Image (tube, rainbow, N blue to C red; front, side, top):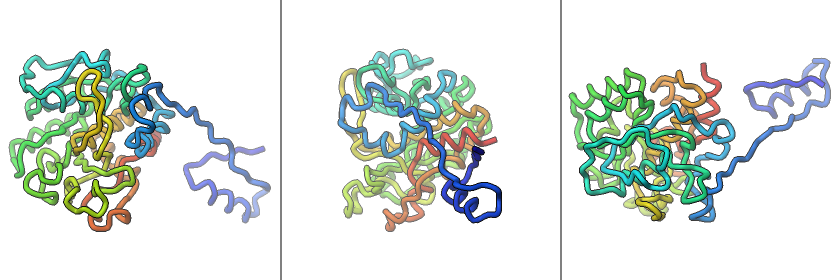
Length: 324
């Protein structure tokens, strides 16, 4: 018995061998071993966490559950640091968090890398990933990158127009090797779904818009007024309609927003870096796009405006693990 392993279409390989003059016969597909990891908090709050299912997160966890040395810096309003989903996950929390909104930042942080397999609440992509919790401003991006954060999540808007000085900050963070992921906007942001929102629309930032459980960009299919942002700056789509969130200790509910679509991408970026820590921000960006599922045919009205496709965690992590 001769085993052949290749990065190719297996069925096509079998057909080629069968038709060749090679001294092989009866080619068959070999076993595909999978551990089928399901954490014990995956279905506690809902029968099925459609968002995690859609991005194929369980198959990504079969490759890696992440690494505690990979840190996502969440820049946001404020946080409940003693939340059950953040216990033991936070390496740093800023001492100048004064915003009275604790729920938004908490929900974003947990969506990216809350506790997994802890018997309560919900699961999150960045199983073993750690977090920094910071305020939302451009200076914090610099502090985050120079403190070692490999991914920065920006689920906020700073304006509707390009700003040269903010772009310089973004450039510095990018050149220092940190991946930046931002919410594209919630449809009415900056006056309309086709308008640019910053920081998402700056160069070197991965701009994320929302899809629903059927890869639908319209939250209510057929209602063009129910979309989040779609424009030429959007890089990728991710679950952002009626997704499972936790906004404060013991509180689990569903919510909408590219604020929550973005941290799914940030969490997956942390898994990619866990299997290949030498990846640059440009390489992460490219691998995310190449591995995504193109959904333009499902959303023809928005073709070319919702990024390269919908996030696929398993394919992104697999490509990252093979990239050199």
